[in-house]
Image 1: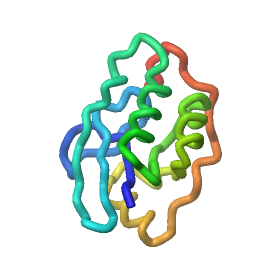
Image 2: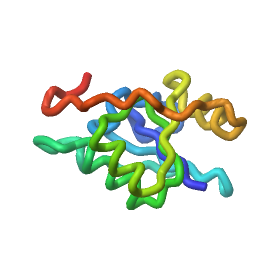
Image 3: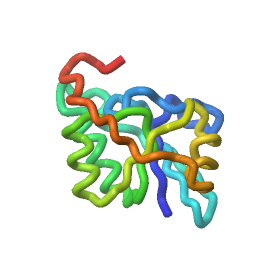
Image 4: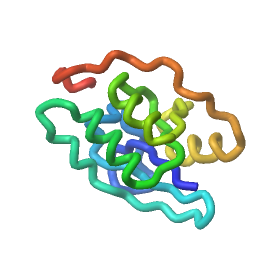
Length: 122
């Protein structure tokens, strides 16, 4: 299973990024092979619609799960249409969140916000 997490750097020791649409990288973790790869978020420099573009990237990656601290409404619509489940992070540790997901300890993200619309979301 492929899990995607927005992260601040391309290292397993980095932290979860608070801004889904403007995250610098996505960590793609394969629960079967335990392999981690990092993908640049091409939406980071978008003038608008970064969340939607980032969401489409998550779907295109073939993710089955997105683990993120928050997500905008339009991005969530794209992710849900791609049949990707969205879970809420428990803290900013990549390893803690992966372990919590594997152990069934993460909750589905239910607080979807209306989006930041060109405000950077920081």
